[in-house]
Structures are given as structure tokens and as C-alpha cells.
Image: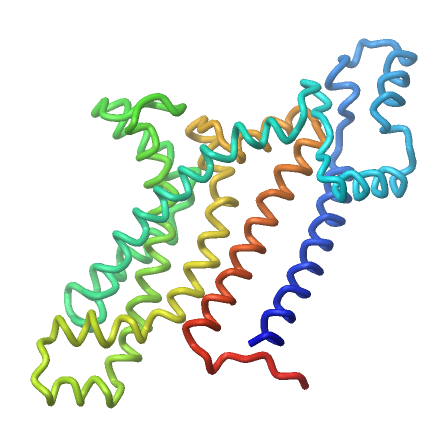
Length: 308
């Protein structure tokens, strides 16, 4: 188990280093000049050069990268080029909204996926199965940038039950959470069905049936727990992906989270803020996958890292 954890931690550190370098290079390859965005195209060239020098944008790319890495080692994310505020303060303001949205989306996804997957597995090739898998196919096919406006049109404009955008009111999170959670529920429902169907054919379940246990007890107490490993793996991947999907959803619903902050920073060519936001999302994805691997190994002791 120790070798397994050390291997996963080392691969995680390598992944984090790769993300840091890739994010830095991609951000600096984006067309556009933050100095022109801040001062305007009509500003004097001398003023542009002075601002570029004060921000360190006149340095060679490798020198900027080295300064960026040294700042990260000191846990210093720098300041926003556009507002001048510390980037850490901006992240602290926006991350809670994204976490709240992701948590509600995850709850909706699990609430929808488990019953649909159970019904589909226990009614194989029957109308319940066809209906559940039809929903799953529909949920995976509809993109967030299309589903979000449709929910706004129906839930906000036609029915008037929800705010159009923003975070005002307790029910403001429901439409963006449905947008994110529906696609995740569709994928999870298919995994629950396939994993349960594989487990339902095992010998220990036939033994449980022979002992006279009720079908509900067999399904929920014996079959479902033994089907959780592949479901857990997919859940970990999807949980990390929620933050990436939240970028589009937060933009559609003007949800004041990390995704909207990143889009605003891209429009303003605010390199440090974009780097910090992408880095935060990437690190969350990597750490969630690491946690999933650890929980996976804890649930199934047979999983061990073996040296070649």
C-alpha cells in the first residue's frame, strides 16, 4: 500500500509541474496585449513601454517563467494586471460559489443516476430500461451552452420560478446545477446499470436468493456495494470535470464563481489571474483523481502497485 501511495503521489507531482508549465506557455501564446487592453490602442508608445516594464512583461519568456515558478514556491500568486488586487483575494471570493454549485450539481446527479441505474439494471430490455438509457443518451448529447438558455427561458422567463442570472435568492443555484448535474447523471446512470448487471450474475447473489432474502435487500445490501468501484472511479473523474464544465455554465448564468472569473480575465488579457484560475481548476482535478485512487485502493485491498 505504501508503494502504491508513493507512486500515485510522485505521478501527481509530475502532473502538477506539467500543468504549471503548460498553463504558463499557453497563456502567453494567446493573441492580444494586456497593456493595450489596460491603456487602450490610442495610448502613447512610451506609456505602453513604461507599463510593460513595470509589470515585467518586457522580460524574456524564460525569465518570466522562472519568476512565476519562484513566486509559486512562496505561495505568491501575484496581483491582477487589471485591478491591481491580490489574486489570492480574488480566488477566495470566487471559489466558494463554484464549490457550492459543484456540490449541488453532484447531489442532483447522484439523486437522478442511482434510481435510473437501478431501474434499468433490474428491468433489462424492458420499458424502464429503455426510458432510463434514453434519458442518459439525451443528457450526454445536450451541451451545457444549449441546455442553460433553455432552462432560463422556461424556468425564469415563462414560469418565473427562478432568477435569470446571478446568485440572488436560495433557488438561484438550481438552474445552473441542473445544467451541470443532468449531463453527469446521464453518464453515472449508464455506469450504475452496466456495473450492476455484471454483479447481478455473480454466484454469491444466487446464494443470497437461495437463502430467501428479499429482492430489495439483495439489490441494495449485496449487489450495489459490490458494484461501487467502477462507479466511484467515474464519479471521481466527473467531480473533477464539474469545475471545467462550470466555466461554460457560470458564464451562461453569470454565476460569480471561478469559471466566470477566468472568462473575464481572458477578455482583459489578465495573464496572472488566468494562470491562477486554470491552475486552481487543474490542481483540483488532479487532487480529486488522487483521492479517488486512494479510496479505490482502500476499498479493494487487491489493488497494489507492482514494479515491472
